[in-house]
Image (tube, rainbow, N blue to C red; front, side):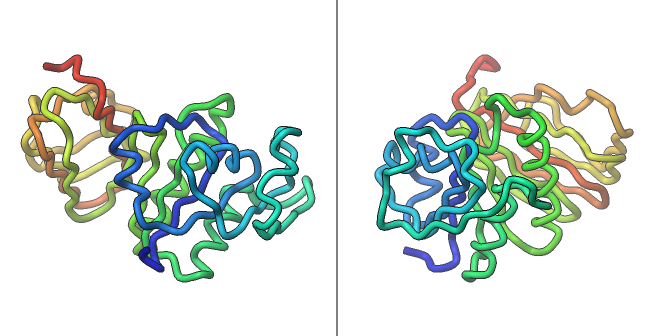
Length: 216
């Protein structure tokens, strides 16, 4: 187990794919409110359970009696997910896997997870958001590589204008490209295998669907 790798169990959708299992292997776990429902399916026991517990199902309330709870009032200034991430960082996290961060009934929470991930990346943290079937990785100034199956779909929406964007080993490559804010130019690309992304300035997210091979 890596002491600096933490998986935060959030309330969104989560599919038990092989990529998910590889991603969370050997990590420590913290559950945020109703995200604890994923613990049994994953076969893990979190070291902490935080939140206001307003989205915890009744049949889950008595589960995991030996996991310490850290309750917060409903009228708090941060989401349960943000609190869980802060607790992980306080315990030495450097890599954060936000499991259940995408999809689900609360699109406002999903959007906030994406924004928070970019902010965390700017602070030097290694961040992955996943639903099992879909993955997201922050893209800030620098270079990252994603190992994606050939023919799988990915998109790169920007949270502002992007300059010096390059995408290599994709069906629609880009080199030193300026992407205006709100442009759909980087939506629905297709991986040719491991894809390399470089950015001079700006903030973006790479959203990948590694099990969607409709681009083959």
